[in-house]
Length: 367
Ligand SMILES: *Cc1c(COP(=O)(O)O)cnc(C)c1O
Image 1 (cartoon, helix red, strand yellow):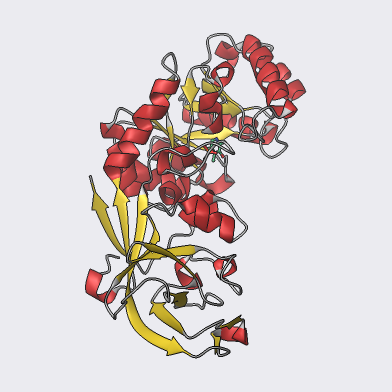
Image 2 (cartoon, rainbow, N blue to C red; image 1 turned 120 degrees about the horizontal axis):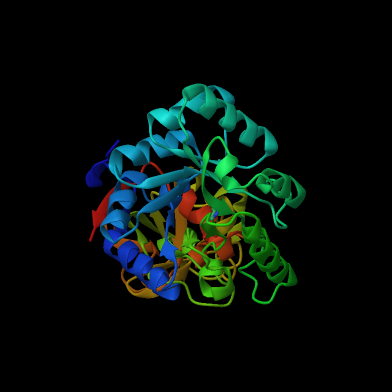
């Protein structure tokens, strides 16, 4: 549903040109590998129907989603792409893979057996990825199961093993010893599946050439959030602007908002904007002391939030921002405020801010 600008509390601007530049920047980091794109969770909140075709135009040929339903949406938007569904098989929907030309990522022996049986019955050797666990302990066959599966040789499988993949647990923390172990285990694993393309690198892995193999699978870096701790992200893709709906003067000692959690240290000007935790602007991003809490930019000045984030509203202390009137623009993400800054104030990661971006915003796509 498209919400018109004059009916929305805020405008979310999504820069598809920045998305494409980020894609090309990541592809350049692995010149020998193909660069795929992870577009699960509605392309990390920015909209899979827009992100998919934009990435395809930038040269992306392979995509990863988490759910079959996401794969079907992407198939309609990117008819020629190879689409892998990361979360594996969900029994009843197995024929959807064939019908929508999607590729399951087989993450357990049961998945492998079920898909092999399906292919045998259908009389078609359909493509799938084999996911092997190298240390994440989430999805994936263990190494012994993978060795057993590989024994008769990849050609003996009833499905086409189009990709061998594994996933990093902590590649974003430079020098973590588990990353080196995962890289070693995956390199050994590839020896078991000769001729099958390999994929290990998430966004953080794009900065680790030993993990590139044949296909890199960045997600969050494409969308402009930090992907290696302590390093700058690529270009911002989202920006969030909201008009001031009211300005009020609050005398020294008075409180603002729920829980009376913020007390004016002086006579203060408070601007109210129509964005709240129901829009994915997390309640934990609020401020009780003018120091913690997410910043907002008003008249070019960084201003602190005043008190708790409500469901549909936030209050901003604009006392130091000069004249502020109803209708003036406040920037909550953009102009030097990154999704990671909002995330840090809320005690979380950029991923959660992006994937939580609200459904009530007016969404504006620019190139
Ligand atoms: C989400 C995901 C990715 C992308 O991770 P980022 O950290 O966003 O780059 C890659 N592979 C798998 C298996 C994933 O679940």
